[in-house]
Length: 422
Image 1 (cartoon, rainbow, N blue to C red):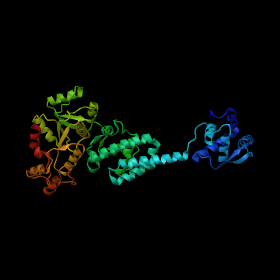
Image 2: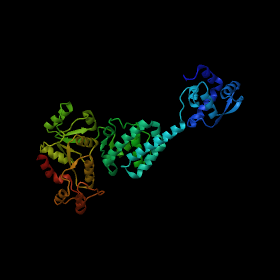
Image 3: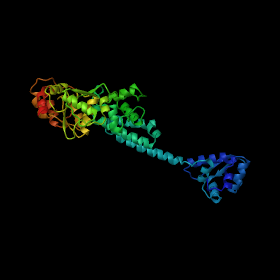
Image 4: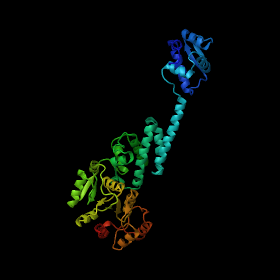
């Protein structure tokens, strides 16, 4: 310590007092750096003599009791003119840590992080939220990461969890075989990078633990079990197995991918896009902002559009939709394109419409009047599966209940083609 005169520094830092200062440091750090209470230390004759001279009181060799307030007062009167905490830091080589305050800070920080985590899962399956939060608290993941890293990871988790929840993945019993996100796409949306949910990253560990709690499964260590949890939540972990079926897309721009898409449209070819290809295309503009793109559920609608050489761009989910198809739909909507969607008039089809609308799409001939007009052209199979709400037209679900007919897109293909050709 620069302020301690050299002579006094040598006096206090003698090897006979090394253990003494270690004991003093430990007591101060556990006592809020307060010079209160007393310590009992073992000193030899030289150490006792030096303490005797500092404290101006009798100190005998062996075990001796020293009151910290007396030691603090003596140091303030000495040539050091410093308090006990400052001198102890100089004698032991580093600043003291208020461990009591540090504990209180950690507790407060952890409580703040846990509160943020609770807010993040409030929109998810509520029955599992508390179990997840308690699991994370007990695991120590957040405190080990540090406040800055943990805060960032929770923010990323919150965005990813909100995307899964708004896509209704927890309401869909068939979601595992019909993913609506690629892992890289979900990570990009939530974290700004396709690697944000890579295995081992804190945000990914939060996501995986939340999924494990939701599906009543053990928290996986890594590998295949982790991938299976993602897939149970409708997140594809590979980027080539599913495709988006598109027709007539003519993206603007002079890059090679946009040029290729326009050439295929000019040749009258249906184009299947994988997640891998979409990643290569990067942040491509699929259609001009303000334009309209139609979307359907059944490939027969797209096939009819191709046969009729419609010029209106069309994307087909081909059932529940692949991760690639949903990525195209979301990219269109984010790019300011109006996506008009038509699907089957059955309960699984209604779930898909809800999912499209929650992503920002709009219904295309999916009202109660459209259903009623189509249902009289039957007969059709009865409705099957869990009833779903139709918030875009509440009369539709009542009409479906009353008619009990599953009207698939093929029944109205000519009406849809009329819109595409108009």
